[in-house]
Amino acid sequence: MFSRNKFNPEKDLKDLTDKVAFVTGGNRGMGYETVKGLARKGATVYLGSRSEEAGKAAVARLEKESVGKGKVIYTWCDFGTTEKAEKSGKELLSQINRLDICVLNGALLADFRIKHLDGTRFVSHFGNLKLLQTILPLLEETSDKYGEARLVTCSSNAYKLGHAADPNIRFESPDDFRQDWTSEGKFKAPFSYYAFSKFCQTMTHVALHKRNKHPNLIFSAVDPGWVNTFSHEYLILRLLKPVINLWFDTPEVGCYNLLFAAASPKMTEEKEKYDGKYLLPVGKLEPWGANVTVEKSEKMLDLSMQFLEKENMFPLLPRME
Image (cartoon, rainbow, N blue to C red; front, side):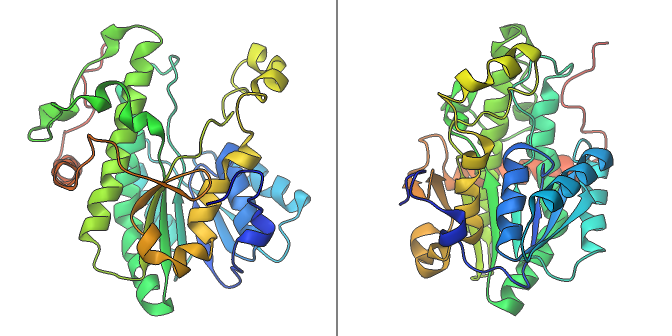
């Protein structure tokens, strides 16, 4: 569709005046840039951040940079537990009466510093799912009342790698979510959990799209590409940032595919082509990986919902202090 060099958010996105958007993980990186892009097209954007201090600081930076005719509002968004995820969703709903665009950008990366690695699987999949379960009815209602709404999931090609590529993966019992890969080592294990969480996020998208009964609600799962969202984490990486950016896109560019899915008029004009699909940067269609099927996705979603509905299902793995 577009190359990164040809895509221009100022020209290639539709006017979003009177539209309401919600972006998780909006206080930095691609989330921050997505908030900025949507607001500059006129949307009122709720910037989701688990830290009030970081969220409000991000709003202040955006106002300083100028968001044109749009508006940015901080809203608390934490899906570290199911309770927090549901409360975050309800807090957002208390502030709005329509939701035209939802961008599920927030997730945990493959980080060896995380004490409990299965937390990556929880936050990126179960936490996101609980939040979405809470706010999805308003997205559906908005699509019916105003003619369109969009749900954008920030996926990654990692969903096809590691254990996520195992054709023997089944979602038939709780144990299928309790694989323990911590013994794989300091660097491989975090990626194993990250890839599996993206696998689950992607299949959630597939299953929800399959079950969607609201024709004006457009689903998309997008891969942002190779984006430098990590060089702020360590001093050595901050020093190497100019070199890293020779190989990775900056968040300013990495957000392009999210913005395309959230606000390109082509998503409406060619709805049959794009709805429910997986997009590479920018707006380029790619078939699902071999391990993602509708049947497996629906089994995964049903089992996930059982986890969310029953008590004492988390943490997924025993805590060894």
